[in-house]
Length: 344
Image (cartoon, rainbow, N blue to C red):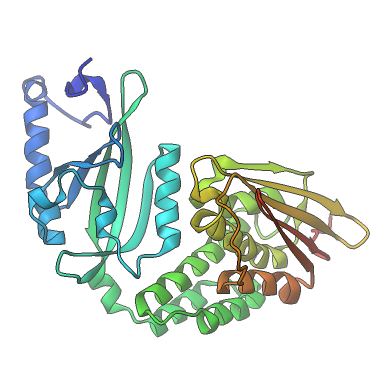
């Protein structure tokens, strides 16, 4: 069927609709798209750069652009100097994997003012399963963000951590104090991403009743936002003790963000291979993280803060060891972590 035919596209059916209204469905959908107060755009996934082909009035009002200034452009024009690389990497991974995306990121209006955008993006396929469009809606979260200051946010997040995770409180405090950025928005986003990594680990702990946490699930929970489908995991069943899950999760999070922002997951063909084997003699395991198919390694391998905090988590919090090697294929990291196996 023609790409423009409404019946050729796969999407959710209305929850309730009369026979008469069904005949007017296409026209009503167009009116609803234009008149809704929620900013929305549609991009053409069959064209290079996924240009915008539809933008409603609410989107133009939010961003300050005119219709002729947005049509035919990629939505990247809303990004700016303090837009989080991790958020961009999460969007990139979702687009490559043709899945829904729900992410908050800092965007910029035409006049240069910043706003926090809760972006929801959904792929639209034709009857043959070919990706043809992306539908995106935006919610301006700026006012909500203004209500909170960083100190209140820290306090609330700390209170949410279960009393059984006292060791993680020190880790959260270190993240907040040591994260470096001269830009307040980028600083807040960096802290938030790391806290979210700990929150995902906390959810896994709660689901497993703080007992016998699988290493595989721990790794996947941190890789999921950045391209878990391009990660090859191989290793025996290893059950982690509760105290080790959140520090180890933070370490994996830093590796995943770096791979998605600068390493193998930043390219369409790159992948990550994670292998591990247990070491019963010291109650731990050895984990090997290898990146393949990424961009050429940097000539100057300066350790960023993400690398420093990840390394410190292994060496200081988990009393383990770490080795990092570079090749033309990418980085290879070997971490040995003792005394983290669950008992019984």
